[in-house]
Length: 117
Image (cartoon, rainbow, N blue to C red):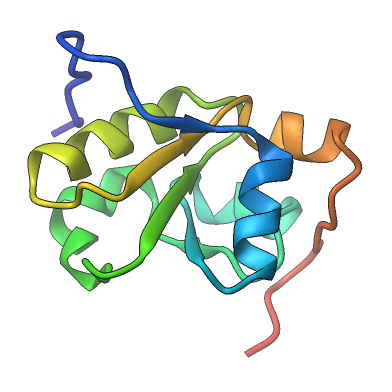
């Protein structure tokens, strides 16, 4: 079952450069909600993968005491996941505007290929 979009309020958002600064400072966790093949193709360093199709079963893995920045390809799926988290007791969730597309356009660091274990 998909995660419904909450149309009743504005989704908290951060821009890619702001997200990267928060990550570099250790102030946030980046959660990638794309499919594993997309994540393997290109991802932000340190991103934690929880595909949207698994999100409702796995969101409990996420910490409550940290900013959670959600990212996907363009920002649509991550907005869904952000709204889901907000409704389920994660008030520090925010969507990365423009997703990995914007991340790459901004010239921010990326990793490619299978993640190193």
